[in-house]
Image (cartoon, rainbow, N blue to C red; front, top):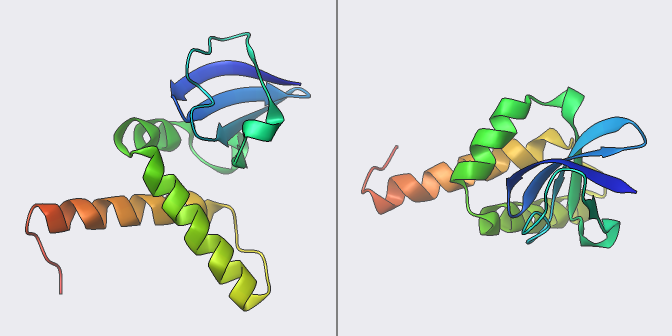
Length: 114
């Protein structure tokens, strides 16, 4: 059973499972949830162990970045893993999402970095 500890946004939730805190991503999994509620593990797209990453980094990223960027990143990484025939480090999900989002924001503002 996945227990909600804190909802970071509608698609990113801090949870506890078997006594271990984790961050889970999934479209709308945090919507209407409160601490103590449970999440159906079938709705989870990606799981991160909180000890491997800074919670404040994910919290800030989740507040600022629309979920579609997490989805885009997941598609890119799945394609890369299939083409390379190997699994990539989980931390790439967050760093690549962050990179893509801020690159798009720079383009929208007309800021181009050579």
